[in-house]
Every structure is written in structure tokens, then in C-alpha cells.
Length: 149
Image 1 (tube, helix red, strand yellow):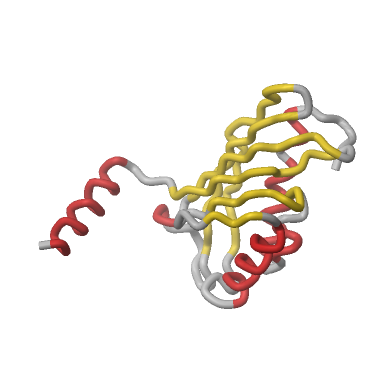
Image 2 (cartoon, rainbow, N blue to C red):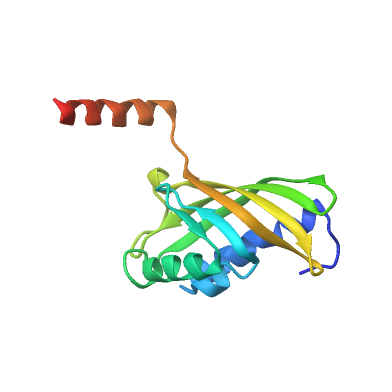
């Protein structure tokens, strides 16, 4: 990591996360996280600290997401918001084994709060969410409402 606390150097966090995921290595996936980081998964699970984040992801990498790859990573914005603090918004697709392209239903976006500490940016909080169009959300709502009847 660079010793320059610029918005541009925040973008390297995503590259490291993608590399770790694509190797199925949860420790590498969260290498740029603070030890006490908080991670909100796309399903709403709140993970506190690397001691929870790493096993959660390694379990996925070893089972349901084994062989999956993150693709089309894009840093939408990275912004310094105060001395030694920044935010990053990034988007990525997930390709499952045997697939060539990601399904739109697996597109994700993350919002990261980062701090400059120890000559590098560290993720202190990450909110992960699926990217849904309003039309897709309304269709899901209609299915759920039909199931409730």
C-alpha cells in the first residue's frame, strides 16, 4: 500500500479484496480491514471484527461460493471526508463456477468507511448490498405478497 493518504490510494483496497475472493482466501479478502472492523453482509448479518469476518467468508468460500469470482470491479468514488478519514463506494459482479458472465441479480455495491492508520488505509466499516432496480424490487414484493395469501 502507498504511504500517501490520497483518495486514489483508497482504490487499491478493492483490488486486494477481489484478489483474496478469487483465491478463496478470506484472510486475504479482509487484509486491509482493521482488526475491529464491522461488516454488514448483503443479507443483513452484522459481523464485528476480523475474528467474525474471516470465518464467515471462509465458510462461504469453502461451500456455497467455492470457485466463484468477483469481476467488473469499479470504484464509483473515493473521497477524503476529514483528516485521516475517507469513504469509498465500489461495485462488483459475482461469477459462479461454470458461468462466463455475472448475473445482474448478483451485482453488489459496498460503502466503506476507511481511516489512515499505520501508513495505509484500513476499512473500519463496510456495508454490502445487492443492486436492484425498482422493477425487480416490485416483482419480488409481488411474489412475497402472493406467498402470504
